[in-house]
Amino acid sequence: MKKSLCIILLSIFSLALNSQPVFNLQDTLRGSLNEHRDWFDIQHYDITVTPSYETKSIIGLVSWTAKVIKPSNNIQIDLQQPLIIDSVIYFAPNAKSGKSLTYSRNENVALVNFNEKLNRNANFKLVIYYHGIPVEAVRPPWDGGWIWKKDANGKPWMSVACQGLGASVWYPCKDHQSDEPDQGASLTMNVPDSLMAVGNGRMIKKENIHQLTSYTWEVKNPINNYNIVPYIGDYMGWSENYNGLKGNLDLHYWVLKQDSTKAKAQFTQVPQMLKAFEYWMGPYPFYEDGYQLVQSPHLGMEHQSAVAYGNKFGNGYLGRDLSGSGWGLKWDFIIVHESGHEWFANNITTNDIADMWVHEGFTNYTETLMTEYYYGIEAGNDYNFGIRRGIQNNKPIIANYGVNEQSDGDMYNKGANLIHTIRHSMDNDSLFRQILLISTNNFIIKQ
Ligand SMILES: [Zn+2]
Image 1 (cartoon, rainbow, N blue to C red):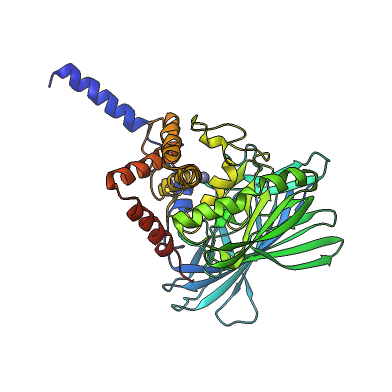
Image 2 (image 1 turned 45 degrees about the vertical axis):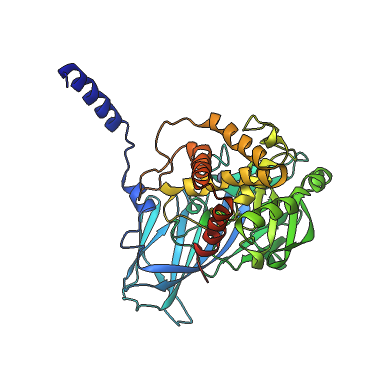
C-alpha cells in the first residue's frame, strides 16, 4: 500500500476514533448493572405524586418492593437532579416498621447503606420521600421531563415523557431497562378537583383529600419505568369492548372534552389496528390491564396500557405519509406505531437501550404489517420500500452498551427494512408469521 494512502486511511481512522462519544461516571452509573444494582430484582413500585402547576414542582413518595438475588447491603437509587431526596425509609424483610437510613448523593444517584446483609430471596421495602422542580420537557417526546401545558381553554394539561432520559427524571427508581417491576406498579396522582388524572392500566381508587382529588391507577403486568406516566387534564372518557384472541378486551379512550367529537371518529381505528396486530403478532399482551388511548400534550409514546396520542385526530404522521407511497395516509400513524410497541418494547423489552432498534425496527415493521393486512402484500411492500428514503446510514443502529446510549433514527426505517429483507430471503410468509407469534409469546417476562 502506498504511503500516502496509508496516511489518508490512518487519518480517517483517527477521525472516526475521535468522533466516538465520551462517557462519564454518571452515564455508567445510569446505564450499567453495577454491584449496587445487580443484587436485587424490583417486584413493585407504588408511586404517589402531587404536582403543582403554578410552581412547576412535585412532591412525591415511592415505595419499592424488591427481592434479594444475592446478599449485599448497598443500594443505588436513581433520581435526577434537581429533585431532592427528603428521606429514605427501610423496611427489613417481614418488618412492620421502618427505619430512616442515611445516604450519600452523587449527582443523579444516591447510595444507601443498610448496615446488614440481606438474605437471598428475602423481600425488602424502601420508601423514598422526595420533592422539587423536575426537568421540564421542552420538545417532548424527543427530549424528556415533566410537561406543563395548557389546553385551548386555558386549563392545565400535564404529563411526562421520559424515554431514554429515564423515569428517574420524575420519580426515584432503579433506572435500568433490564429490571421491570415483576408485579406491576401503581400510580396515585393528587390533582385539583377541576382536573382528571389518568394512569396506566385501571383506576382502582378515587377519593377526596384536602381539596384535591386523588386517583390511583394500577397495572398488574411488568412495565418499563419510562412507561409509567401521569396524564392530568380536563379529560372525558368512553369505553368499548373488543372481542380479541384472548376473549374480551376492554378499550378505554381519554381525550380533552373539547376534542371528543373528532376523537370519537378517529379512534374507530383502534379495533382495526388490534385485529391486524393480533393476527400477525398474537394476543394483545396486557388483557389484564386493558387497553387505553390517552390524548397527550405531545405527539405520542408507547406508554403501556395507556398509549399517548397527540396526532391531531388525522391520518398519517401529523398528516404526512412518511413512505411517500400513499399507503401511510390510510391509517393514523400514532395509533398504529405506538400501539405496535405494546408487542415490541413493552412485551419484548431489550435489557440495554443500546439495542433499542429491536423496539423501533419491529414496531416500524408493524406499520408495514398493518398496510399489508388491509391493502395487500404489494401495498405493504410499497410502504416498506418507501420508508427507505428516510435511511441515513450515518452510524450503526446498535449503540454503546452500559452507558444508556441509543442510536439514531435509522433504527426505525433501516430496522424495518432489515426485517423485511430477512422475510424475503426466507420466502415463506407463514413461517415468518410463526416466528413473530412465537417471539411475542416466548420472549417476555413471565409472572
Ligand atoms: Zn417507536
